[in-house]
Figure 1 (cartoon, rainbow, N blue to C red):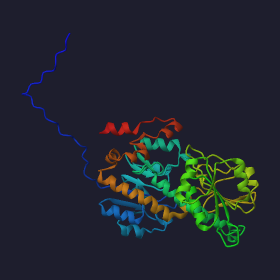
Figure 2 (figure 1 turned 135 degrees about the horizontal axis):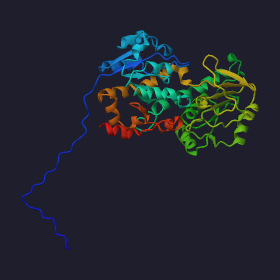
Figure 3 (figure 1 turned 135 degrees about the vertical axis):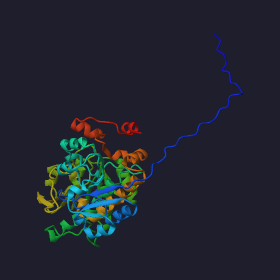
Figure 4 (figure 1 turned 180 degrees about the vertical axis):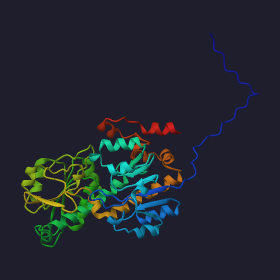
Length: 404
């Protein structure tokens, strides 16, 4: 059967339809609460008085618990002058629609949480508990984690800043424990004319390793870097701009270098949970007495077999006469700098949330923020957490699309 050609009458006129664009809603005023952190060794605060001043000037309300900024040397007066309301009962803080914390959510927070609250805080996957997650799911909480939050370039800005602080700090810490004042062996980290430079071994060529290497080189030390990623070693060379001694992690070469070093820094990242242990107890036992180990990766279990968690109050212990510094959350020891770094990321994010008319709209318009969300209106949207705790996983993109 022959197909007839379509008949088009000249009397029919065709018009193009107008394109419908997604119009951004009008902004809304946010009420942001900052509780005082009670967890051990947490001195940071997620918003500085300067950031609070900007938020208040843009029509948002900020409530802060009394003495919340004390660990970072910010007073209630600083916050009051910036326009924040100082609150003396932390239950009042939890009435805010958005909570900003510098420590992970704990059991005490869960009890006070109101339904449909949005929380921006760290998550610390290694110590996350199932019952905390379930309580947050029950209360239909939306939760964003510092660690997974991405910027427009696809990087994790808060993690990067904290790693830069930790990397820069480790050499200052090592120098402190090499001095006689702390019963060290009395060695100055640096190059003095006529004296061989202090030998520093860095295991891990990520951001922490790079900034540790920068600081050590600036002090005049001799630096050797180990990492199993050739890409990371190349990137470190390029970023620092000088040829450096680098090697893949080969146990015999590593053991030989550790025997003669003055400072050993563990800066491996535990991307898949726990950090791999690459320095055995036997390797540590052959190190020279008085050598300083700073294990930055202790947050994820540590990469030295002899490492054990210490605190800011009692930061070191000796094993085989080797000084071990294994304080988790090193940036908290430099709380003011760390608070400013966190605040620089969160303040623009909160401003944008207000401009977009709330978190739901902001998540719709800003794709990169979605990577930081692990709970959305009580639904678990982080695949790793759902696998680990055997909880129902929901795809965030589907959730958001279904709400439009």
